[in-house]
Length: 104
Image (cartoon, rainbow, N blue to C red; front, side):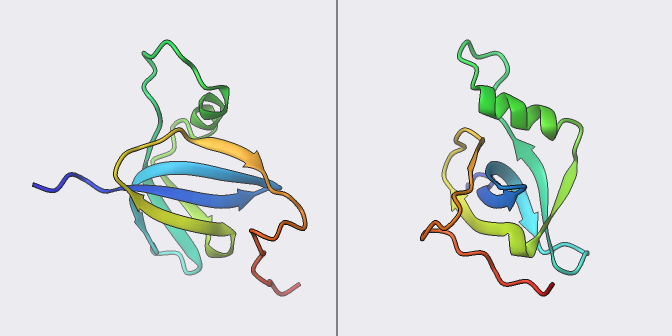
């Protein structure tokens, strides 16, 4: 029996790159948005606490469903197991990430 899929979603938000994990993603009912449901975070009972993941967990506390603008999504991967959610800096002028052109 196949286990439930886990998705790693990377998106840009206010000069940072957020990397989160979720069980369900879809194009959703809002045009131009990616719908993300059932966000996954590490276990609270563990001895080692990652401050970045804890910050994300607090930011998304109480959120059942989140809508991300399609132009901010950098990558969506289906992964075998969940990793640590994190926030990193979006480097200006980086050759690895090119922003999608948006009308002014």
